Amino acid sequence: MMTTRPRPAPEPWTPPHDADVLAAFAGRLKVWKPLDVEALLDDVADALDDLPPTAMDVPDLLQRLQAHLGQLATISIANEASEKEDDVARLLVRGETLRASPLPSEPAKAQGHLRQVGWVVNELVERLVEAQYMKGTE
Image 1 (cartoon, one colour):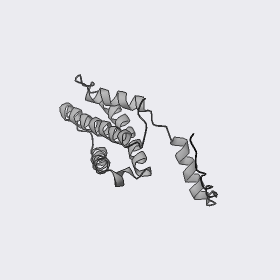
Image 2 (cartoon, helix red, strand yellow):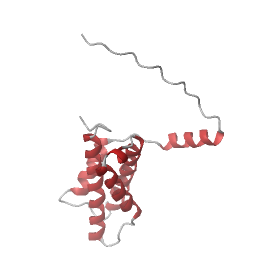
Image 3 (tube, rainbow, N blue to C red):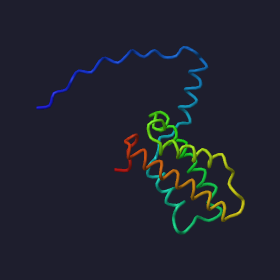
Image 4 (cartoon, rainbow, N blue to C red):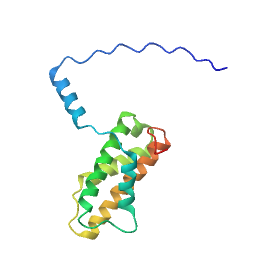
């Protein structure tokens, strides 16, 4: 027989009264998109595949990977994963460095940059799933 202990009642929530705070919150909700792990893994696979994407596809794929990286960073920060997991902190720093770097114009270097971003996204997902900060594709 399993018994459960009663949980303390949550503290009552009071909404912010500042119009600017509410407007900023509403704006963030409008552009928010849930993390699509399957699409993320598809993009990582495309970036790291032995057959590289065409030069025309690299900018779009890089943009999607950078968006995934931003979502993973938000999950990491919200869960304080970067403070608890050294690997997560290191990957977030590497990812931010890559996001700030412009896409090289030379195709081989652009491909290398894309692969680096794909690798960071892949490793970050693995660390966050392993540490149970997010669910995988089960």
